[in-house]
Length: 264
Image 1 (cartoon, rainbow, N blue to C red):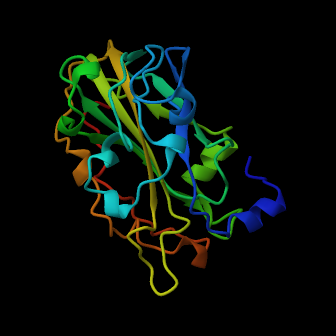
Image 2: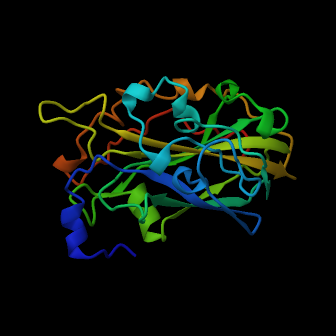
Protein backbone atom coordinates (compact mmCIF):
# COMPACT_ATOMS: atom_id res chain seq x y z
CA UNK A 1 0.00 0.00 0.00
CA UNK A 2 1.25 3.47 -0.88
CA UNK A 3 0.18 5.37 2.22
CA UNK A 4 3.26 6.84 3.95
CA UNK A 5 3.04 9.50 6.67
CA UNK A 6 2.70 13.04 5.38
CA UNK A 7 6.05 13.99 6.92
CA UNK A 8 7.75 11.60 4.52
CA UNK A 9 6.35 13.59 1.63
CA UNK A 10 8.26 16.62 2.86
CA UNK A 11 11.39 14.56 3.45
CA UNK A 12 11.25 13.24 -0.10
CA UNK A 13 11.81 16.76 -1.41
CA UNK A 14 15.03 17.33 0.53
CA UNK A 15 18.13 16.16 -1.37
CA UNK A 16 20.53 14.01 0.68
CA UNK A 17 24.06 13.38 -0.54
CA UNK A 18 25.58 11.15 2.10
CA UNK A 19 23.63 7.99 1.36
CA UNK A 20 25.12 4.55 1.92
CA UNK A 21 23.27 1.58 0.46
CA UNK A 22 23.84 -2.16 0.38
CA UNK A 23 22.03 -5.49 0.16
CA UNK A 24 21.67 -6.77 3.70
CA UNK A 25 19.89 -10.10 3.02
CA UNK A 26 19.48 -12.52 0.13
CA UNK A 27 16.92 -15.32 -0.31
CA UNK A 28 17.35 -18.12 -2.89
CA UNK A 29 15.66 -21.55 -2.95
CA UNK A 30 14.08 -20.74 0.40
CA UNK A 31 17.44 -20.15 2.07
CA UNK A 32 18.43 -16.86 3.67
CA UNK A 33 21.97 -15.57 3.28
CA UNK A 34 23.49 -12.49 4.90
CA UNK A 35 24.65 -9.71 2.63
CA UNK A 36 28.11 -8.18 2.78
CA UNK A 37 28.40 -5.19 5.10
CA UNK A 38 31.85 -3.60 4.80
CA UNK A 39 31.27 -1.81 8.11
CA UNK A 40 30.39 -4.91 10.13
CA UNK A 41 32.51 -7.50 8.32
CA UNK A 42 35.79 -5.64 8.30
CA UNK A 43 38.39 -5.72 5.56
CA UNK A 44 38.72 -7.95 2.52
CA UNK A 45 41.21 -10.37 4.07
CA UNK A 46 38.58 -12.48 5.81
CA UNK A 47 35.69 -13.23 3.46
CA UNK A 48 33.15 -15.57 5.09
CA UNK A 49 31.92 -18.59 3.14
CA UNK A 50 28.38 -18.04 4.36
CA UNK A 51 27.31 -15.49 1.76
CA UNK A 52 27.07 -15.32 -2.04
CA UNK A 53 27.30 -11.52 -1.83
CA UNK A 54 30.43 -10.04 -3.35
CA UNK A 55 32.71 -8.23 -0.94
CA UNK A 56 33.51 -4.55 -1.09
CA UNK A 57 35.86 -2.18 0.67
CA UNK A 58 33.08 0.37 0.52
CA UNK A 59 32.48 1.07 4.19
CA UNK A 60 28.86 2.09 4.56
CA UNK A 61 28.08 1.34 0.93
CA UNK A 62 28.63 4.89 -0.32
CA UNK A 63 27.34 5.71 -3.81
CA UNK A 64 29.12 5.92 -7.12
CA UNK A 65 28.34 8.67 -9.61
CA UNK A 66 28.16 9.21 -13.39
CA UNK A 67 31.83 10.15 -13.30
CA UNK A 68 32.47 6.53 -12.16
CA UNK A 69 30.39 4.96 -14.93
CA UNK A 70 33.41 3.69 -16.86
CA UNK A 71 35.57 2.67 -13.90
CA UNK A 72 36.04 -0.88 -12.52
CA UNK A 73 34.17 -0.03 -9.32
CA UNK A 74 30.90 0.36 -11.26
CA UNK A 75 30.89 -3.42 -11.82
CA UNK A 76 30.35 -4.62 -8.24
CA UNK A 77 30.87 -1.48 -6.10
CA UNK A 78 34.07 0.02 -4.75
CA UNK A 79 36.65 -2.65 -3.98
CA UNK A 80 34.41 -5.41 -5.33
CA UNK A 81 35.83 -8.92 -4.90
CA UNK A 82 34.45 -12.38 -5.61
CA UNK A 83 32.22 -14.19 -3.14
CA UNK A 84 33.54 -17.57 -2.01
CA UNK A 85 30.30 -19.42 -2.74
CA UNK A 86 27.37 -19.35 -5.17
CA UNK A 87 23.81 -19.68 -3.91
CA UNK A 88 21.83 -22.47 -5.62
CA UNK A 89 18.65 -21.32 -7.33
CA UNK A 90 16.37 -22.99 -9.86
CA UNK A 91 15.98 -21.43 -13.30
CA UNK A 92 12.64 -19.65 -13.38
CA UNK A 93 12.67 -19.11 -9.60
CA UNK A 94 12.94 -15.84 -7.72
CA UNK A 95 15.89 -14.36 -5.88
CA UNK A 96 14.86 -11.82 -3.28
CA UNK A 97 17.12 -9.19 -1.77
CA UNK A 98 16.63 -6.61 0.98
CA UNK A 99 18.17 -3.18 0.69
CA UNK A 100 19.54 -1.28 3.65
CA UNK A 101 21.17 2.10 4.01
CA UNK A 102 23.82 2.42 6.70
CA UNK A 103 21.87 1.72 9.90
CA UNK A 104 18.37 2.28 8.60
CA UNK A 105 15.87 1.24 5.95
CA UNK A 106 16.14 2.76 2.48
CA UNK A 107 15.06 6.43 2.73
CA UNK A 108 11.98 7.67 0.93
CA UNK A 109 13.76 10.64 -0.65
CA UNK A 110 16.11 8.47 -2.72
CA UNK A 111 13.76 7.92 -5.66
CA UNK A 112 14.88 6.11 -8.76
CA UNK A 113 14.96 2.97 -10.91
CA UNK A 114 16.01 -0.56 -9.99
CA UNK A 115 17.85 -2.71 -12.52
CA UNK A 116 19.09 -6.32 -12.60
CA UNK A 117 21.81 -7.80 -14.79
CA UNK A 118 23.21 -11.31 -15.23
CA UNK A 119 26.60 -12.54 -16.45
CA UNK A 120 27.85 -16.10 -16.95
CA UNK A 121 31.00 -16.95 -15.03
CA UNK A 122 32.08 -19.72 -17.42
CA UNK A 123 33.02 -21.84 -14.41
CA UNK A 124 33.18 -21.04 -10.71
CA UNK A 125 32.24 -17.45 -9.95
CA UNK A 126 34.73 -17.37 -7.09
CA UNK A 127 37.50 -17.54 -9.72
CA UNK A 128 36.10 -15.25 -12.42
CA UNK A 129 37.76 -11.96 -13.32
CA UNK A 130 35.29 -9.20 -12.45
CA UNK A 131 36.15 -6.94 -15.38
CA UNK A 132 35.76 -9.85 -17.79
CA UNK A 133 32.09 -10.39 -16.99
CA UNK A 134 29.61 -9.68 -19.81
CA UNK A 135 26.21 -8.61 -18.47
CA UNK A 136 22.75 -8.67 -19.96
CA UNK A 137 19.87 -6.79 -18.35
CA UNK A 138 17.15 -9.18 -17.16
CA UNK A 139 14.80 -6.75 -15.40
CA UNK A 140 14.18 -3.05 -14.86
CA UNK A 141 11.61 -0.74 -13.32
CA UNK A 142 11.67 3.04 -13.06
CA UNK A 143 8.89 5.59 -12.64
CA UNK A 144 5.59 3.94 -11.73
CA UNK A 145 3.04 6.76 -11.57
CA UNK A 146 2.49 10.33 -10.42
CA UNK A 147 1.01 9.46 -7.03
CA UNK A 148 2.10 9.96 -3.44
CA UNK A 149 5.21 12.16 -3.76
CA UNK A 150 6.13 15.44 -5.39
CA UNK A 151 8.53 13.38 -7.54
CA UNK A 152 5.98 10.64 -8.21
CA UNK A 153 6.12 7.00 -7.16
CA UNK A 154 9.25 5.10 -8.31
CA UNK A 155 10.57 1.53 -8.18
CA UNK A 156 12.50 2.42 -5.02
CA UNK A 157 9.24 3.48 -3.36
CA UNK A 158 7.71 0.13 -4.30
CA UNK A 159 10.72 -1.57 -2.71
CA UNK A 160 10.30 0.47 0.47
CA UNK A 161 6.60 -0.43 0.60
CA UNK A 162 7.66 -4.09 0.43
CA UNK A 163 9.74 -3.85 3.59
CA UNK A 164 12.88 -2.98 1.65
CA UNK A 165 12.85 -6.15 -0.44
CA UNK A 166 12.98 -6.66 -4.21
CA UNK A 167 12.40 -9.81 -6.25
CA UNK A 168 14.36 -10.82 -9.35
CA UNK A 169 13.11 -13.67 -11.55
CA UNK A 170 15.84 -15.90 -12.99
CA UNK A 171 15.10 -16.60 -16.69
CA UNK A 172 13.33 -20.00 -16.88
CA UNK A 173 15.23 -21.35 -19.90
CA UNK A 174 18.66 -20.22 -18.73
CA UNK A 175 21.36 -22.87 -19.08
CA UNK A 176 22.64 -24.37 -15.81
CA UNK A 177 25.85 -22.91 -14.43
CA UNK A 178 27.27 -20.19 -12.23
CA UNK A 179 26.30 -16.58 -12.81
CA UNK A 180 26.82 -13.17 -11.26
CA UNK A 181 23.63 -11.26 -10.55
CA UNK A 182 24.37 -7.53 -10.63
CA UNK A 183 21.49 -5.73 -8.92
CA UNK A 184 21.45 -1.95 -8.80
CA UNK A 185 19.59 1.09 -7.55
CA UNK A 186 20.15 4.43 -9.25
CA UNK A 187 18.99 7.24 -6.95
CA UNK A 188 18.04 10.44 -8.77
CA UNK A 189 17.30 12.84 -5.93
CA UNK A 190 20.42 14.97 -6.63
CA UNK A 191 20.81 14.29 -10.37
CA UNK A 192 20.76 18.02 -11.08
CA UNK A 193 22.48 21.28 -10.16
CA UNK A 194 21.17 24.73 -9.36
CA UNK A 195 22.31 25.96 -12.77
CA UNK A 196 21.38 23.00 -14.95
CA UNK A 197 19.87 19.52 -15.10
CA UNK A 198 23.05 17.46 -14.95
CA UNK A 199 26.02 16.96 -12.65
CA UNK A 200 28.88 14.45 -12.84
CA UNK A 201 28.38 14.02 -9.09
CA UNK A 202 24.59 13.89 -9.34
CA UNK A 203 22.89 10.54 -9.88
CA UNK A 204 23.90 7.91 -7.32
CA UNK A 205 24.72 4.33 -8.38
CA UNK A 206 24.42 1.48 -5.88
CA UNK A 207 25.60 -1.71 -7.65
CA UNK A 208 25.71 -4.99 -5.71
CA UNK A 209 26.78 -8.43 -6.96
CA UNK A 210 25.60 -11.89 -5.90
CA UNK A 211 26.99 -15.23 -7.15
CA UNK A 212 24.37 -17.80 -8.15
CA UNK A 213 24.44 -21.47 -9.13
CA UNK A 214 21.52 -21.85 -11.56
CA UNK A 215 20.11 -25.37 -11.67
CA UNK A 216 17.63 -27.01 -14.04
CA UNK A 217 16.22 -24.74 -16.70
CA UNK A 218 17.05 -25.08 -20.35
CA UNK A 219 20.03 -24.67 -22.63
CA UNK A 220 19.99 -20.94 -23.44
CA UNK A 221 23.33 -19.28 -22.83
CA UNK A 222 23.67 -15.59 -22.04
CA UNK A 223 24.38 -13.80 -25.32
CA UNK A 224 25.12 -10.21 -26.25
CA UNK A 225 26.36 -9.22 -22.81
CA UNK A 226 28.62 -6.21 -22.23
CA UNK A 227 31.26 -5.06 -19.78
CA UNK A 228 29.49 -3.22 -16.93
CA UNK A 229 31.86 -0.32 -17.56
CA UNK A 230 30.00 0.31 -20.83
CA UNK A 231 26.44 0.10 -19.47
CA UNK A 232 26.18 3.85 -18.95
CA UNK A 233 27.79 6.92 -20.48
CA UNK A 234 26.80 9.07 -17.52
CA UNK A 235 24.78 11.73 -19.31
CA UNK A 236 21.78 9.71 -20.51
CA UNK A 237 18.30 11.26 -20.19
CA UNK A 238 17.49 8.70 -17.48
CA UNK A 239 20.41 9.95 -15.38
CA UNK A 240 20.50 13.65 -16.19
CA UNK A 241 17.14 14.98 -15.04
CA UNK A 242 15.51 16.91 -12.23
CA UNK A 243 12.84 14.65 -10.73
CA UNK A 244 11.63 17.38 -8.34
CA UNK A 245 9.97 19.54 -10.98
CA UNK A 246 6.94 17.30 -11.51
CA UNK A 247 5.38 14.04 -10.28
CA UNK A 248 4.78 13.01 -13.91
CA UNK A 249 7.81 11.27 -15.43
CA UNK A 250 5.83 9.15 -17.87
CA UNK A 251 8.47 9.68 -20.53
CA UNK A 252 11.27 8.43 -18.30
CA UNK A 253 13.90 6.55 -20.32
CA UNK A 254 15.53 3.68 -18.46
CA UNK A 255 19.33 3.86 -18.54
CA UNK A 256 21.38 0.94 -19.83
CA UNK A 257 20.68 -1.58 -22.61
CA UNK A 258 17.25 -3.08 -23.32
CA UNK A 259 16.09 -6.09 -21.31
CA UNK A 260 17.41 -9.41 -22.66
CA UNK A 261 14.61 -11.89 -23.25
CA UNK A 262 16.63 -14.75 -24.75
CA UNK A 263 15.95 -17.22 -21.95
CA UNK A 264 12.36 -16.27 -21.07
